Image 1 (tube, rainbow, N blue to C red):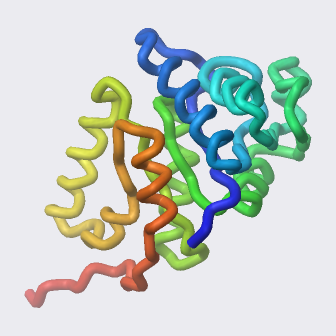
Image 2 (spheres, rainbow, N blue to C red):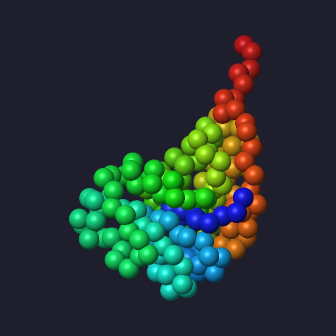
Length: 195
């Protein structure tokens, strides 16, 4: 697979640790250096604004997708290559997925997790064959990845579906992993043990 665009899910806040900001800057720069279009939620605030600004400053192309309700609150980024205003959150996520060849989650809150898990579920069900990854920063996702291993062990997720999620502390290594990832076809349903 040759990536042309990467969707980044991340916080509308910057978090409490400077490493989160540094990671957003590094990812934005890495995308621009590789001539990969950044697709994201269109905000000018938090890590969203930081990753977009970093990509733009490095000469990258950035496409933002934002719901009208958030645009009305004036948090839309005004300096993007393109900003699309859509009707709501469902339309936003569908459009970001349509425009993207891969997905990366930086640290973030409920929206970041929801976006990541929805697009991961779509991949699990075979609606797309696009890679996804976590940019691990300062141990932010360590408890989540341990829990993901737990639900595999408990028989709710198959190991190949767990392995769809690439994890790295390096933007460059994560982009390499996503670019070389090959989808596997595995049924979602875990076999029931007799009786």
